[in-house]
Image (cartoon, rainbow, N blue to C red; front, side):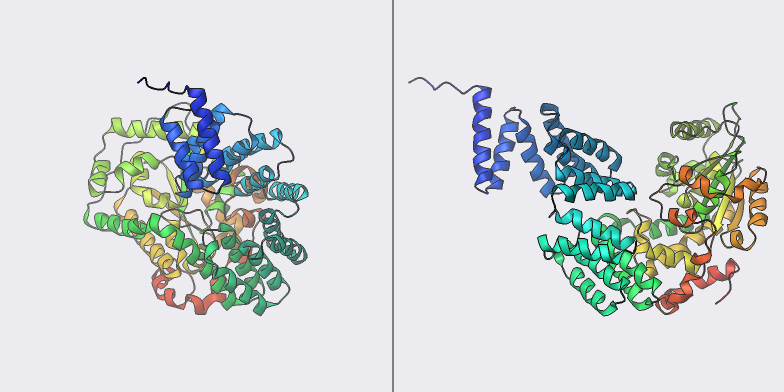
Length: 548
Protein backbone atom coordinates (compact mmCIF):
# COMPACT_ATOMS: atom_id res chain seq x y z
CA UNK A 1 0.00 0.00 0.00
CA UNK A 2 1.51 3.34 -1.04
CA UNK A 3 1.78 6.30 1.29
CA UNK A 4 -0.40 9.36 0.54
CA UNK A 5 1.43 12.32 -0.96
CA UNK A 6 2.36 14.91 1.72
CA UNK A 7 0.81 18.31 1.17
CA UNK A 8 3.09 21.08 -0.09
CA UNK A 9 3.93 24.19 1.95
CA UNK A 10 1.19 26.26 0.33
CA UNK A 11 -1.47 23.66 1.01
CA UNK A 12 -0.26 23.19 4.58
CA UNK A 13 -0.17 26.95 5.17
CA UNK A 14 -3.72 27.26 3.84
CA UNK A 15 -4.90 24.45 6.11
CA UNK A 16 -3.39 26.07 9.20
CA UNK A 17 -4.83 29.46 8.25
CA UNK A 18 -8.27 27.93 7.86
CA UNK A 19 -8.11 26.04 11.15
CA UNK A 20 -6.77 29.05 13.08
CA UNK A 21 -9.55 31.23 11.66
CA UNK A 22 -12.20 28.66 12.58
CA UNK A 23 -10.82 28.30 16.11
CA UNK A 24 -10.75 32.08 16.59
CA UNK A 25 -14.32 32.47 15.34
CA UNK A 26 -15.41 29.76 17.76
CA UNK A 27 -13.71 31.58 20.63
CA UNK A 28 -11.16 28.79 21.11
CA UNK A 29 -8.13 31.06 21.32
CA UNK A 30 -5.99 28.44 23.03
CA UNK A 31 -6.34 26.11 20.04
CA UNK A 32 -5.67 29.00 17.65
CA UNK A 33 -2.40 29.73 19.44
CA UNK A 34 -1.42 26.07 19.54
CA UNK A 35 -2.04 25.80 15.81
CA UNK A 36 0.01 28.94 15.13
CA UNK A 37 2.90 27.55 17.16
CA UNK A 38 2.72 24.23 15.33
CA UNK A 39 2.75 25.98 11.96
CA UNK A 40 5.83 28.01 12.87
CA UNK A 41 7.54 24.90 14.28
CA UNK A 42 7.03 23.28 10.89
CA UNK A 43 8.84 26.16 9.22
CA UNK A 44 5.70 27.69 7.73
CA UNK A 45 5.66 31.48 7.49
CA UNK A 46 2.61 33.74 7.50
CA UNK A 47 2.02 37.02 9.32
CA UNK A 48 -1.07 35.55 11.04
CA UNK A 49 0.97 32.77 12.61
CA UNK A 50 3.40 35.25 14.14
CA UNK A 51 0.61 37.59 15.24
CA UNK A 52 -1.37 34.85 16.99
CA UNK A 53 1.70 33.54 18.79
CA UNK A 54 2.58 37.11 19.78
CA UNK A 55 -0.83 37.32 21.46
CA UNK A 56 0.02 34.25 23.50
CA UNK A 57 3.37 35.74 24.56
CA UNK A 58 1.58 38.97 25.50
CA UNK A 59 -0.71 37.12 27.90
CA UNK A 60 2.43 35.90 29.69
CA UNK A 61 3.99 39.36 29.78
CA UNK A 62 6.85 38.27 27.50
CA UNK A 63 6.90 41.52 25.56
CA UNK A 64 10.33 41.23 24.00
CA UNK A 65 9.20 37.95 22.42
CA UNK A 66 5.93 39.61 21.40
CA UNK A 67 7.94 42.29 19.65
CA UNK A 68 10.15 39.76 17.87
CA UNK A 69 7.11 37.91 16.49
CA UNK A 70 5.35 41.11 15.44
CA UNK A 71 8.45 42.31 13.64
CA UNK A 72 8.63 38.96 11.86
CA UNK A 73 5.00 39.39 10.81
CA UNK A 74 5.78 42.91 9.63
CA UNK A 75 8.55 41.61 7.38
CA UNK A 76 5.83 39.68 5.54
CA UNK A 77 3.14 42.40 5.54
CA UNK A 78 4.99 45.70 6.07
CA UNK A 79 2.05 48.06 5.48
CA UNK A 80 -0.63 46.38 7.62
CA UNK A 81 -1.90 49.20 9.90
CA UNK A 82 -3.34 46.78 12.47
CA UNK A 83 0.04 45.11 12.79
CA UNK A 84 1.81 48.47 13.02
CA UNK A 85 -0.47 49.47 15.91
CA UNK A 86 0.29 46.22 17.71
CA UNK A 87 4.02 46.87 17.33
CA UNK A 88 3.62 50.44 18.56
CA UNK A 89 1.67 49.28 21.59
CA UNK A 90 4.32 46.69 22.40
CA UNK A 91 7.11 49.25 22.09
CA UNK A 92 5.28 51.37 24.64
CA UNK A 93 5.19 48.44 27.03
CA UNK A 94 8.97 47.98 26.79
CA UNK A 95 9.48 51.73 27.36
CA UNK A 96 10.48 52.75 23.85
CA UNK A 97 8.03 55.61 23.24
CA UNK A 98 10.08 57.37 20.56
CA UNK A 99 10.26 54.18 18.47
CA UNK A 100 6.57 53.56 19.14
CA UNK A 101 5.65 57.02 17.88
CA UNK A 102 7.50 56.45 14.60
CA UNK A 103 5.64 53.16 14.01
CA UNK A 104 2.28 54.67 14.97
CA UNK A 105 2.83 57.63 12.67
CA UNK A 106 3.26 55.08 9.88
CA UNK A 107 0.03 53.35 10.95
CA UNK A 108 -1.90 56.64 10.82
CA UNK A 109 -0.42 57.41 7.41
CA UNK A 110 -1.42 53.96 6.13
CA UNK A 111 -5.00 54.27 7.43
CA UNK A 112 -5.96 57.82 8.50
CA UNK A 113 -9.40 56.79 9.78
CA UNK A 114 -8.09 54.02 12.07
CA UNK A 115 -9.17 55.17 15.54
CA UNK A 116 -6.93 52.79 17.48
CA UNK A 117 -3.86 54.03 15.62
CA UNK A 118 -4.63 57.60 16.71
CA UNK A 119 -5.28 56.43 20.27
CA UNK A 120 -2.00 54.54 20.63
CA UNK A 121 -0.21 57.48 19.02
CA UNK A 122 -1.71 59.67 21.74
CA UNK A 123 -0.38 57.31 24.41
CA UNK A 124 3.10 57.49 22.87
CA UNK A 125 2.95 61.28 22.79
CA UNK A 126 1.93 61.28 26.43
CA UNK A 127 4.90 59.09 27.32
CA UNK A 128 7.08 61.71 25.64
CA UNK A 129 5.38 64.52 27.62
CA UNK A 130 4.02 66.10 24.42
CA UNK A 131 0.76 66.92 26.15
CA UNK A 132 -0.97 69.11 23.57
CA UNK A 133 -0.12 66.68 20.77
CA UNK A 134 -1.45 63.87 22.96
CA UNK A 135 -4.71 65.76 23.47
CA UNK A 136 -5.09 66.29 19.71
CA UNK A 137 -4.50 62.60 18.99
CA UNK A 138 -7.17 61.55 21.48
CA UNK A 139 -9.59 64.15 20.13
CA UNK A 140 -9.01 62.71 16.65
CA UNK A 141 -9.67 59.23 18.06
CA UNK A 142 -13.09 60.16 19.43
CA UNK A 143 -13.92 62.11 16.27
CA UNK A 144 -13.55 58.82 14.39
CA UNK A 145 -14.97 56.59 17.13
CA UNK A 146 -17.11 58.66 19.54
CA UNK A 147 -17.48 55.86 22.10
CA UNK A 148 -13.75 55.04 22.42
CA UNK A 149 -13.73 54.71 26.22
CA UNK A 150 -9.96 54.80 26.70
CA UNK A 151 -9.49 57.95 24.63
CA UNK A 152 -12.42 59.62 26.39
CA UNK A 153 -10.97 58.70 29.79
CA UNK A 154 -7.59 60.08 28.81
CA UNK A 155 -9.21 63.33 27.69
CA UNK A 156 -11.00 63.44 31.04
CA UNK A 157 -7.68 63.00 32.84
CA UNK A 158 -6.03 65.72 30.75
CA UNK A 159 -8.89 68.07 31.58
CA UNK A 160 -8.60 67.20 35.27
CA UNK A 161 -4.84 67.83 35.20
CA UNK A 162 -5.41 71.27 33.70
CA UNK A 163 -8.11 72.11 36.28
CA UNK A 164 -11.00 72.01 33.81
CA UNK A 165 -13.70 70.30 35.87
CA UNK A 166 -16.43 70.75 33.24
CA UNK A 167 -14.49 68.94 30.51
CA UNK A 168 -13.36 66.27 32.95
CA UNK A 169 -17.00 65.57 33.81
CA UNK A 170 -18.10 65.57 30.16
CA UNK A 171 -15.43 63.21 28.90
CA UNK A 172 -15.60 61.04 32.01
CA UNK A 173 -19.36 60.61 31.68
CA UNK A 174 -19.02 59.70 28.00
CA UNK A 175 -16.40 57.08 28.85
CA UNK A 176 -18.65 55.60 31.52
CA UNK A 177 -21.51 55.50 29.02
CA UNK A 178 -19.44 53.04 27.03
CA UNK A 179 -17.76 51.28 29.99
CA UNK A 180 -19.59 51.90 33.32
CA UNK A 181 -16.73 50.71 35.55
CA UNK A 182 -13.89 52.39 33.65
CA UNK A 183 -11.46 53.13 36.50
CA UNK A 184 -9.47 56.01 34.91
CA UNK A 185 -12.73 57.74 33.95
CA UNK A 186 -14.08 57.33 37.48
CA UNK A 187 -10.82 58.71 38.88
CA UNK A 188 -11.00 61.71 36.54
CA UNK A 189 -14.54 62.38 37.76
CA UNK A 190 -13.25 62.25 41.33
CA UNK A 191 -10.74 64.97 40.48
CA UNK A 192 -13.56 67.05 38.97
CA UNK A 193 -15.45 66.66 42.25
CA UNK A 194 -12.42 67.86 44.19
CA UNK A 195 -12.15 70.86 41.90
CA UNK A 196 -15.84 71.57 42.61
CA UNK A 197 -15.33 71.21 46.37
CA UNK A 198 -17.32 67.97 46.65
CA UNK A 199 -14.65 66.31 48.78
CA UNK A 200 -16.75 63.55 50.35
CA UNK A 201 -18.09 62.43 46.97
CA UNK A 202 -14.55 62.46 45.56
CA UNK A 203 -13.24 60.30 48.39
CA UNK A 204 -16.06 57.83 47.94
CA UNK A 205 -15.41 57.60 44.21
CA UNK A 206 -11.65 57.17 44.71
CA UNK A 207 -12.36 54.41 47.23
CA UNK A 208 -14.39 52.54 44.62
CA UNK A 209 -11.54 52.89 42.11
CA UNK A 210 -8.99 51.57 44.61
CA UNK A 211 -11.25 48.59 45.35
CA UNK A 212 -11.39 47.62 41.66
CA UNK A 213 -8.90 44.78 41.33
CA UNK A 214 -9.20 44.80 37.54
CA UNK A 215 -7.54 48.24 37.48
CA UNK A 216 -4.52 47.38 39.62
CA UNK A 217 -2.04 47.66 36.75
CA UNK A 218 -3.61 50.67 35.01
CA UNK A 219 -1.05 53.45 35.39
CA UNK A 220 -3.69 56.03 34.51
CA UNK A 221 -5.27 55.41 37.90
CA UNK A 222 -1.93 56.25 39.51
CA UNK A 223 -1.77 59.46 37.48
CA UNK A 224 -5.30 60.35 38.55
CA UNK A 225 -4.49 59.67 42.21
CA UNK A 226 -1.52 62.00 41.92
CA UNK A 227 -3.68 64.68 40.32
CA UNK A 228 -6.33 64.17 43.01
CA UNK A 229 -3.69 64.50 45.73
CA UNK A 230 -2.43 67.76 44.22
CA UNK A 231 -6.00 69.04 43.95
CA UNK A 232 -6.63 68.21 47.61
CA UNK A 233 -3.32 69.87 48.47
CA UNK A 234 -4.22 73.13 46.71
CA UNK A 235 -7.43 73.24 48.75
CA UNK A 236 -5.48 72.59 51.96
CA UNK A 237 -7.20 69.23 52.50
CA UNK A 238 -3.98 67.77 53.88
CA UNK A 239 -5.17 64.43 55.24
CA UNK A 240 -7.01 63.61 52.00
CA UNK A 241 -4.01 64.67 49.92
CA UNK A 242 -1.64 62.51 51.93
CA UNK A 243 -4.02 59.55 51.68
CA UNK A 244 -4.11 59.93 47.89
CA UNK A 245 -0.30 60.14 47.66
CA UNK A 246 -0.05 57.04 49.84
CA UNK A 247 -2.59 55.10 47.76
CA UNK A 248 -0.79 56.05 44.55
CA UNK A 249 2.54 54.85 45.92
CA UNK A 250 1.19 51.64 47.41
CA UNK A 251 -0.35 50.71 44.07
CA UNK A 252 2.95 51.37 42.34
CA UNK A 253 4.89 49.52 45.01
CA UNK A 254 2.73 46.42 44.61
CA UNK A 255 3.67 46.27 40.93
CA UNK A 256 7.37 46.98 41.48
CA UNK A 257 8.06 44.76 44.48
CA UNK A 258 8.82 41.64 42.45
CA UNK A 259 11.46 43.57 40.50
CA UNK A 260 13.16 45.61 43.21
CA UNK A 261 12.46 44.20 46.69
CA UNK A 262 15.14 41.51 46.59
CA UNK A 263 18.01 43.98 45.98
CA UNK A 264 17.19 47.14 47.90
CA UNK A 265 19.25 50.25 47.16
CA UNK A 266 19.37 51.20 50.83
CA UNK A 267 21.14 47.93 51.62
CA UNK A 268 23.64 48.47 48.81
CA UNK A 269 24.40 51.92 50.22
CA UNK A 270 24.92 50.49 53.71
CA UNK A 271 27.31 47.83 52.38
CA UNK A 272 29.37 50.53 50.68
CA UNK A 273 29.33 52.55 53.88
CA UNK A 274 30.74 49.56 55.77
CA UNK A 275 33.51 49.21 53.18
CA UNK A 276 34.61 52.84 53.34
CA UNK A 277 34.36 52.92 57.13
CA UNK A 278 37.10 50.31 57.27
CA UNK A 279 39.29 51.33 54.32
CA UNK A 280 42.21 53.82 54.42
CA UNK A 281 42.12 57.17 52.66
CA UNK A 282 42.43 56.83 48.91
CA UNK A 283 45.35 58.49 47.18
CA UNK A 284 44.65 60.90 44.34
CA UNK A 285 44.97 59.76 40.73
CA UNK A 286 47.45 61.52 38.50
CA UNK A 287 45.80 64.33 36.50
CA UNK A 288 44.58 63.23 33.10
CA UNK A 289 46.42 64.37 29.99
CA UNK A 290 44.32 67.04 28.29
CA UNK A 291 43.57 66.52 24.60
CA UNK A 292 42.88 69.45 22.31
CA UNK A 293 39.21 68.54 21.82
CA UNK A 294 38.41 68.04 25.51
CA UNK A 295 36.47 70.56 27.62
CA UNK A 296 37.95 73.52 29.41
CA UNK A 297 36.35 72.24 32.60
CA UNK A 298 34.39 69.30 33.94
CA UNK A 299 31.68 69.47 36.58
CA UNK A 300 29.63 66.74 38.23
CA UNK A 301 26.35 68.10 39.59
CA UNK A 302 24.82 65.64 42.00
CA UNK A 303 22.81 65.26 45.19
CA UNK A 304 19.65 63.50 46.33
CA UNK A 305 16.66 63.68 44.00
CA UNK A 306 14.51 66.83 44.35
CA UNK A 307 17.42 68.81 45.82
CA UNK A 308 17.59 71.52 43.16
CA UNK A 309 19.99 69.95 40.67
CA UNK A 310 17.72 70.72 37.71
CA UNK A 311 17.38 74.38 38.64
CA UNK A 312 21.14 74.82 39.04
CA UNK A 313 21.92 72.96 35.82
CA UNK A 314 19.49 75.19 33.90
CA UNK A 315 21.02 78.36 35.33
CA UNK A 316 24.54 77.21 34.45
CA UNK A 317 23.49 76.06 30.98
CA UNK A 318 22.39 79.62 30.20
CA UNK A 319 26.08 80.63 30.23
CA UNK A 320 27.80 80.59 26.82
CA UNK A 321 30.77 78.91 28.49
CA UNK A 322 28.78 75.84 29.56
CA UNK A 323 27.50 72.71 27.84
CA UNK A 324 25.10 70.51 29.82
CA UNK A 325 23.22 67.26 29.24
CA UNK A 326 20.32 66.48 31.52
CA UNK A 327 20.65 63.13 33.32
CA UNK A 328 22.43 61.20 30.61
CA UNK A 329 24.16 58.00 31.65
CA UNK A 330 27.91 57.83 30.95
CA UNK A 331 29.25 55.85 33.92
CA UNK A 332 27.00 52.77 33.96
CA UNK A 333 29.59 50.27 32.71
CA UNK A 334 32.41 51.10 35.15
CA UNK A 335 29.85 51.46 37.96
CA UNK A 336 28.64 47.88 37.38
CA UNK A 337 32.22 46.63 37.28
CA UNK A 338 33.67 48.42 40.30
CA UNK A 339 31.02 49.66 42.73
CA UNK A 340 28.88 46.68 43.69
CA UNK A 341 31.36 44.54 45.59
CA UNK A 342 34.31 44.96 47.92
CA UNK A 343 36.56 43.28 45.35
CA UNK A 344 35.39 45.74 42.72
CA UNK A 345 36.15 48.71 44.98
CA UNK A 346 39.57 47.25 45.76
CA UNK A 347 40.20 46.99 42.04
CA UNK A 348 39.07 50.56 41.45
CA UNK A 349 41.41 51.87 44.13
CA UNK A 350 44.31 50.01 42.49
CA UNK A 351 43.61 50.89 38.84
CA UNK A 352 46.71 51.78 36.87
CA UNK A 353 47.04 54.82 34.63
CA UNK A 354 46.44 52.84 31.41
CA UNK A 355 43.10 51.50 32.65
CA UNK A 356 42.09 54.89 34.00
CA UNK A 357 42.80 56.42 30.60
CA UNK A 358 40.71 53.74 28.87
CA UNK A 359 37.67 54.46 31.05
CA UNK A 360 38.06 58.21 30.61
CA UNK A 361 38.21 57.77 26.86
CA UNK A 362 34.99 55.71 26.92
CA UNK A 363 33.27 58.39 29.02
CA UNK A 364 34.18 61.25 26.67
CA UNK A 365 33.21 59.18 23.63
CA UNK A 366 29.78 58.68 25.20
CA UNK A 367 29.43 62.41 25.87
CA UNK A 368 30.23 63.28 22.26
CA UNK A 369 27.94 60.56 20.88
CA UNK A 370 25.16 62.14 22.98
CA UNK A 371 25.63 65.32 20.95
CA UNK A 372 27.58 67.51 23.40
CA UNK A 373 30.13 69.80 21.72
CA UNK A 374 32.42 70.06 24.75
CA UNK A 375 35.61 71.36 23.18
CA UNK A 376 36.67 74.55 24.95
CA UNK A 377 33.55 74.55 27.17
CA UNK A 378 32.83 73.60 30.75
CA UNK A 379 30.85 70.37 30.63
CA UNK A 380 28.25 69.92 33.38
CA UNK A 381 27.19 66.32 33.95
CA UNK A 382 24.05 66.47 36.07
CA UNK A 383 22.95 63.12 37.49
CA UNK A 384 21.67 63.20 41.09
CA UNK A 385 22.54 59.64 42.02
CA UNK A 386 26.09 59.99 40.74
CA UNK A 387 26.55 60.95 44.40
CA UNK A 388 26.72 57.18 45.00
CA UNK A 389 29.49 56.94 42.39
CA UNK A 390 31.92 59.41 43.94
CA UNK A 391 34.69 56.77 44.26
CA UNK A 392 34.53 56.28 40.50
CA UNK A 393 34.48 60.03 39.83
CA UNK A 394 37.39 60.65 42.20
CA UNK A 395 39.55 57.99 40.51
CA UNK A 396 38.73 58.75 36.89
CA UNK A 397 38.45 62.54 37.05
CA UNK A 398 40.70 63.93 39.80
CA UNK A 399 40.50 67.43 38.32
CA UNK A 400 36.69 67.53 38.07
CA UNK A 401 34.69 69.94 40.19
CA UNK A 402 31.84 68.39 42.16
CA UNK A 403 28.73 70.34 43.15
CA UNK A 404 26.63 68.70 45.85
CA UNK A 405 23.10 70.13 45.82
CA UNK A 406 21.44 70.40 49.22
CA UNK A 407 17.90 71.26 50.24
CA UNK A 408 16.01 71.01 53.52
CA UNK A 409 15.96 67.21 54.07
CA UNK A 410 12.30 67.30 55.11
CA UNK A 411 11.29 68.99 51.84
CA UNK A 412 13.47 66.58 49.86
CA UNK A 413 11.93 63.46 51.36
CA UNK A 414 8.36 64.68 51.14
CA UNK A 415 8.87 65.82 47.55
CA UNK A 416 10.29 62.43 46.57
CA UNK A 417 7.34 60.71 48.22
CA UNK A 418 4.70 62.83 46.50
CA UNK A 419 6.03 62.69 42.92
CA UNK A 420 5.78 59.90 40.38
CA UNK A 421 9.16 58.75 39.04
CA UNK A 422 10.02 56.15 36.45
CA UNK A 423 10.55 52.83 38.26
CA UNK A 424 14.14 52.14 39.26
CA UNK A 425 16.08 50.53 42.07
CA UNK A 426 16.53 53.95 43.70
CA UNK A 427 13.03 55.38 43.20
CA UNK A 428 11.50 52.22 44.67
CA UNK A 429 12.78 53.57 48.00
CA UNK A 430 10.56 56.65 47.62
CA UNK A 431 7.26 54.78 47.66
CA UNK A 432 6.98 54.69 51.45
CA UNK A 433 7.77 57.74 53.52
CA UNK A 434 9.86 55.91 56.11
CA UNK A 435 11.80 54.02 53.42
CA UNK A 436 12.51 57.32 51.69
CA UNK A 437 13.74 58.97 54.91
CA UNK A 438 16.00 56.05 55.77
CA UNK A 439 17.38 55.97 52.23
CA UNK A 440 18.08 59.70 52.38
CA UNK A 441 19.91 59.31 55.69
CA UNK A 442 21.93 56.35 54.37
CA UNK A 443 22.96 58.25 51.23
CA UNK A 444 23.98 61.33 53.19
CA UNK A 445 26.01 59.22 55.62
CA UNK A 446 27.82 57.63 52.68
CA UNK A 447 28.53 61.01 51.07
CA UNK A 448 30.00 62.26 54.36
CA UNK A 449 32.25 59.22 54.45
CA UNK A 450 33.27 59.74 50.83
CA UNK A 451 34.24 63.31 51.66
CA UNK A 452 36.48 62.01 54.42
CA UNK A 453 38.13 59.19 52.49
CA UNK A 454 38.27 60.34 48.84
CA UNK A 455 40.45 63.07 47.31
CA UNK A 456 38.10 65.34 45.40
CA UNK A 457 37.11 68.98 44.95
CA UNK A 458 33.55 69.20 46.30
CA UNK A 459 31.43 72.21 47.14
CA UNK A 460 27.95 72.30 48.65
CA UNK A 461 25.20 74.29 46.91
CA UNK A 462 22.05 75.08 48.86
CA UNK A 463 18.83 75.27 46.90
CA UNK A 464 17.39 77.90 49.24
CA UNK A 465 20.36 80.27 48.70
CA UNK A 466 19.28 80.72 45.09
CA UNK A 467 16.15 82.47 46.31
CA UNK A 468 17.72 84.38 49.20
CA UNK A 469 20.61 85.86 47.17
CA UNK A 470 20.54 84.73 43.55
CA UNK A 471 23.51 86.68 42.20
CA UNK A 472 25.69 86.00 45.24
CA UNK A 473 24.98 82.25 45.23
CA UNK A 474 25.53 81.95 41.48
CA UNK A 475 28.74 83.98 41.52
CA UNK A 476 30.13 81.59 44.13
CA UNK A 477 29.19 78.59 42.00
CA UNK A 478 30.65 80.18 38.86
CA UNK A 479 33.92 80.90 40.63
CA UNK A 480 34.11 77.32 41.85
CA UNK A 481 33.63 75.75 38.42
CA UNK A 482 35.77 78.29 36.57
CA UNK A 483 33.33 80.35 34.52
CA UNK A 484 32.45 84.02 34.56
CA UNK A 485 29.20 85.29 36.03
CA UNK A 486 26.99 86.61 33.24
CA UNK A 487 23.90 88.75 33.81
CA UNK A 488 22.11 86.73 31.10
CA UNK A 489 22.09 83.83 33.56
CA UNK A 490 19.26 85.56 35.41
CA UNK A 491 16.97 84.73 32.47
CA UNK A 492 17.62 81.01 32.69
CA UNK A 493 14.16 79.84 31.69
CA UNK A 494 15.09 80.12 28.01
CA UNK A 495 17.75 77.45 28.58
CA UNK A 496 15.21 75.05 30.08
CA UNK A 497 13.71 73.96 26.77
CA UNK A 498 17.06 72.83 25.40
CA UNK A 499 18.46 71.36 28.61
CA UNK A 500 15.74 69.69 30.68
CA UNK A 501 14.12 66.42 29.77
CA UNK A 502 10.42 67.40 29.48
CA UNK A 503 9.53 64.26 31.46
CA UNK A 504 11.52 65.51 34.45
CA UNK A 505 9.46 66.08 37.58
CA UNK A 506 11.31 69.39 37.99
CA UNK A 507 10.65 70.74 34.50
CA UNK A 508 7.35 72.59 35.24
CA UNK A 509 8.80 74.35 38.28
CA UNK A 510 12.01 75.41 36.53
CA UNK A 511 10.01 76.89 33.66
CA UNK A 512 8.28 79.15 36.20
CA UNK A 513 11.60 80.76 37.11
CA UNK A 514 12.51 81.31 40.75
CA UNK A 515 9.53 79.63 42.35
CA UNK A 516 9.54 79.82 46.15
CA UNK A 517 6.36 77.81 46.66
CA UNK A 518 8.28 74.55 46.98
CA UNK A 519 10.16 75.66 50.11
CA UNK A 520 8.84 74.55 53.48
CA UNK A 521 6.09 72.35 52.02
CA UNK A 522 6.82 69.71 54.65
CA UNK A 523 5.40 71.97 57.38
CA UNK A 524 1.87 71.60 56.07
CA UNK A 525 2.31 67.82 56.42
CA UNK A 526 3.98 67.98 59.81
CA UNK A 527 1.60 65.44 61.39
CA UNK A 528 1.96 62.98 58.53
CA UNK A 529 5.76 63.34 58.58
CA UNK A 530 6.09 63.04 62.35
CA UNK A 531 7.29 59.39 62.23
CA UNK A 532 10.25 60.24 59.97
CA UNK A 533 11.33 63.59 61.42
CA UNK A 534 13.68 61.95 63.98
CA UNK A 535 15.41 60.10 61.12
CA UNK A 536 16.00 63.37 59.29
CA UNK A 537 16.82 65.60 62.26
CA UNK A 538 20.60 64.90 62.29
CA UNK A 539 20.80 66.03 58.66
CA UNK A 540 18.61 69.07 59.30
CA UNK A 541 21.16 70.08 61.93
CA UNK A 542 24.21 69.10 59.88
CA UNK A 543 23.14 71.26 56.95
CA UNK A 544 22.09 74.18 59.13
CA UNK A 545 18.34 74.24 58.54
CA UNK A 546 16.00 75.62 61.22
CA UNK A 547 14.44 73.08 63.55
CA UNK A 548 10.92 74.23 62.68
